[in-house]
Structure formats: C-alpha cells, structure tokens
Length: 412
Image 1 (cartoon, rainbow, N blue to C red):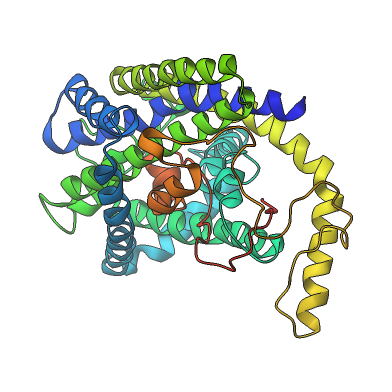
Image 2: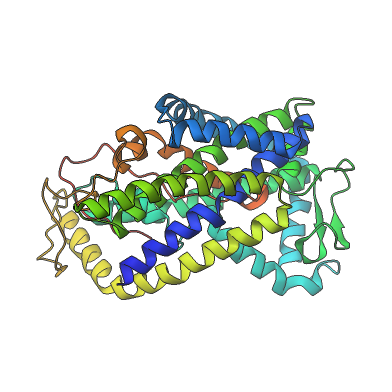
C-alpha cells in the first residue's frame, strides 16, 4: 500500500509539479542571453521533448547525454577560473558569508530564519538527499552489494553541494553579481547587493550569466544558457521516464485491461508533462518554484518515512559490507545474512516491475534510459541548483558498469 501511494505521488510530482521549474530555467536563461520570448523557448522545449517521449527519437537524448558531462566540466572549470581571477576578494566574500549567516550583518540580521528556510528548500534540490528521486537511478545500478551504491549516493552530497554549489556561490559573490530581496521575490525591497549587477538582470540564472560575462564578455550568458538548456531538458526527460516507471508499477499485470490502461495513461502522461513544461516556461519564476516545492515536499515526506522504516535494514547492510571489506573480500550481498526478507539476489534481480516491460518510447527500458541520460541528471544539473535555482531529477551517478550480478540498492 505504501509503495502504491509513493508511486502515485511520484507520478503527480514528476509530471505536473516539478517539470515547470526546469522549463522556467531554460526560458529565463534564454531570455537573459538572447532576448528570446518565453513562449518561443517553451515551444522549442515541448517540440524536442515530444520527439523523444512520444516519437521515440533516441538520438536526441543520446546526444544530450554525451554533451552534458562535457559542459558540466567546462562550467566547473569556468567557475574556478572566475574565482581565481577575483581571488583578492575572497576574504571579504568569506566575511560576508559568515556575517550574513549568523546575523552579524545588519542588512541581513532580520532574515536569519528565512535564510535557513531557503537553504533547506534549495539544498534538497542540490543533492536530493531524502527527496525520493535518487532511489530511481540508484536502483538501476548493478552492484555486488547495495552499500556500494549507498556510499556513492552519500558521497554525491559533498560533491554537489560543498564543491560545485560553493564554487558557484563564490563566483557570484566575488564578482558582485547579486541582489538579495526581502522574501526572496524581486518585488520585495533590496536588502543587499554586490554593486556590479547590470540593471534588468533577473534573479537566478542571470546572476551566474553575469558573473561569467565579467570574465568572458558576450560569451558567459550564452554558455550558461546553452548549458542550462541541456541540463534542464534532460532532467525533464528523466522525470518522464521515472513517472512512467511508477505508473507501470501502479498498473502492473498482464491482463488485457491493465495493458490497455497502461497504454492510454502513458499517452495522458506524455501530454501532461508536455503541458506542464510549456506552462513552466511562461509562468513567473515564483509560481514555478512554488509548484516545484510542493512536488518535492510531498515526495520527501513519504520518502523520509520509508527511510526511517528501513533504517535498521540499511545499517545491517552497512555492517555486513564493512565486515566483508575488513576480511579482504569484495563484498557480496546475501539477503539472508542481513535479514532483508523478500530481497532479490543473483542475476535474476532486475529493476523492472513484474508483469510489465517498464519500457519507455520505442522499447526503452528504465535501465536503458538511465544508461543514456544519467549524466544529465545525476549531479550535473544539481551543480547549478542553489544559485541558478533549477533542481535535479535525481541524485548521484549510478554506476552502470559494475558486477554482473544485479542487487538491490541502499539509497540516501
């Protein structure tokens, strides 16, 4: 029953509530870089998205999956270069961060509670710890012991949040390309600013675009817009396939009625995500984020409950893993040894739902989709999450080249 509730909530969140944030990031970055109207960006997004999820054009997703990690590396290198070029400002940046965080700075002293609230809300977009989307990618990994994938998931938090997001924050602060608004909305009064941000630049991706432009005039905004388009678009693709997989779980079975229901509801799912993506491009940023926060919130509450229920089994698996490592072995998972009843082990353990193919467009199974798209949403997009204000579909990289024996996964 719990699994069915979580699957239903996941379908709703990933189809109707969260794609708009991604699409809004694409349209706002395109508007900042090239002045493209939001509806034009929205039309382009849904046309290309329809080719993939409805028409089954795999090459687009494969190309995006190839380009995304390259652009992610270029972004990280670029951010570090910008910070190094402004290294003389790092002491005052650190002072600003510390004083603002603890309310010493008079301008921000009254919003410490609000800052914590925003930090929690946006932090989960960065690393997805406890959100409930990470398990989808982690479950597609083939590892000899679930703790291996659990450690990968946990390690991604440090990479995404402490390294990548910090690099973005230092880049923006050191160039002075920021404004802080009361309540987090641009119609609120300005509480503080860096003094270098050009007039008319919208909050979010525009700050990072302006920071890059300070080093690469005329190129920074375009680079961020193109990168964000790849990151956000492939995240929407991932949302769809995760939603479809959960729909297949809800309608699992081989009866003619179930098969027909899956077919029709899959089409409805495609129309729904296309519609929500387009609406997200033309919506105000605040509205898109409000809907996204609702989607993340309902998934997180259910997922955290599941984590608490499964914590004992996870800890037993961790102890079993450590015991085998200390013995000099490559840890192998034995469900009976850790008292995980009903867990599959051996080559027959698959992520597909019994009674369904869990395939995407043109025969793509969820495992195959994750093998093509993962770098686009396993961490790459989250590297922009805190400042560019665009969340990630799932957490850390799921290893797709592991032990041939398929196992269950402990996720963060």
